Amino acid sequence: MYFMFKLSMEGLSSKDLMWVFMLLFIQICGARGCIEEEKMGLLEFKAFLKVNDENADFLLPSWIDYNNISECCSWDRVICSPTTGRVEKLFLNDIRQQQPFLDDDGWFNYENEKFWLLNVSLFLPFEELRHLNLSAHSFDGFIENEGFEGLPSLKKLEILDISWNEFNKSVIKYLGAITSLKTLILSKIELSGSFLIQELASLQNLKVLDLSNNQLKSYQLVQGFKGLSSSKKLEILDITSNGLDKNAIKHLGAITSLKTLVLSQVGLSGSFPLQARQDSKNLSIFKRLETLKLDSNKFKNTTMQQLNIFTSLKNLSLTSNNLEGFLHIQGIIMHFGKLDDVGPE
Image (cartoon, rainbow, N blue to C red; front, top):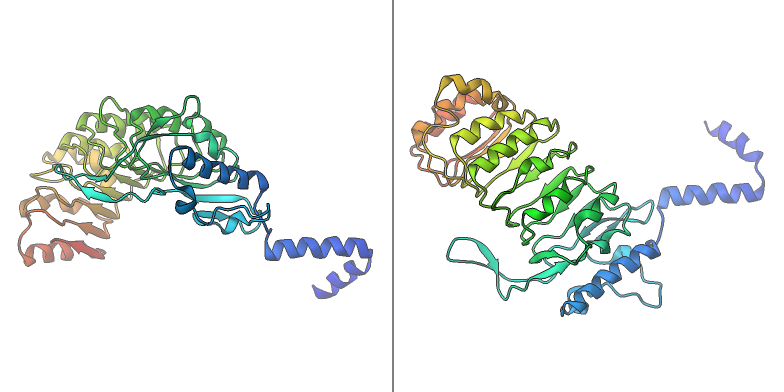
């Protein structure tokens, strides 16, 4: 190999050699410096904070362009590709550093909460963006004609987190057009009402969907499970703190690819996951589950009689239920030879 490389190099001019070594250097060391257009895009987001009466220099102290030579890939909350220098990840969550507190209804909210409108067009210059976190900002809408309808142009966006905002159901029809998404976090964005999960059915690459803390009703979830049945890659579904009943549970069988299911604090009680033996065909999904979380429900020891259908389960969490006795949990462990973790407290 070395001999062949030596012979081919001998036939090159000094100018050709210079280009070869330059390309090798870029390949090995990576591209240096962020793209100017993307640097300006980041500074526009900082200016957006200032327009909304935020102390942007305090919140984003590293985002300063010294004489047009500042390296924006080294700024806080920004991660660039080591080879192209383009921005790949933006962690813009909770920039305003609001202090959370637990309200009288058991929900976390923010002190001195101020609602404001998001300008999504600020992110369009980032053509290589893969991960965008906009959680915990108290956004309650968009600047006119500057909403999520523009995000589908980001062809490589795989992870989007807009949790803990006040967007409501109006965003869903736009999110369904971002077909590159693999992870979508929609926790606590006020989806209650006539929200239809099936509008996300076009996201055929989706692997993780978090709908927790939205107070969705059971009938809405049933419609959603049917709509998501075409998804062959969805592996993680979190519907914590929504309304759920046994009718909705059996319809989960439509999503055959699930490996992790989080059903914490959804008001379930009695037998789980089904009462009638004839429903077991609809619940073949549970044969694939590896992680099941049933925390903060109303299950008792007799609830666990149906657990023998979870043949692939490795992690089972049952905290804050009405389970009693070590021997009962020991029986569960003996039944699931592969179980790595049980949380009964």
